[in-house]
Amino acid sequence: MLSAVRINPNAVAETTSSTRGLRNLYCVRFGFAIVWAGLLALTASTLTPATIACTTRLF
Figure 1 (cartoon, rainbow, N blue to C red):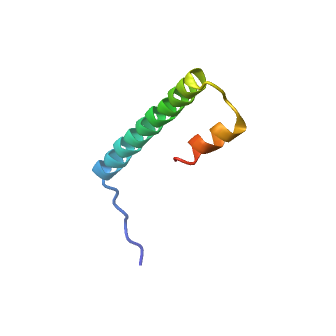
Figure 2: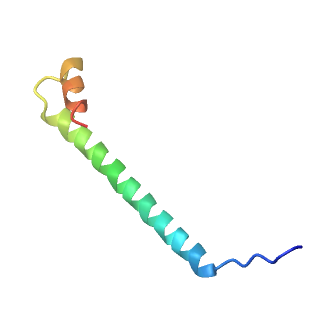
């Protein structure tokens, strides 16, 4: 027996809006990481592999 599958258009719209929100959050997070790395490079008195390794362990 075959049955018709009904798709709720509201569910599709909710999924699309939550995906858009997560994408925006990811872009903001990426931008913050770039700014953080730039400020770290500008304010570091010496930028060596050891100082880079110490700061990346915080995350």
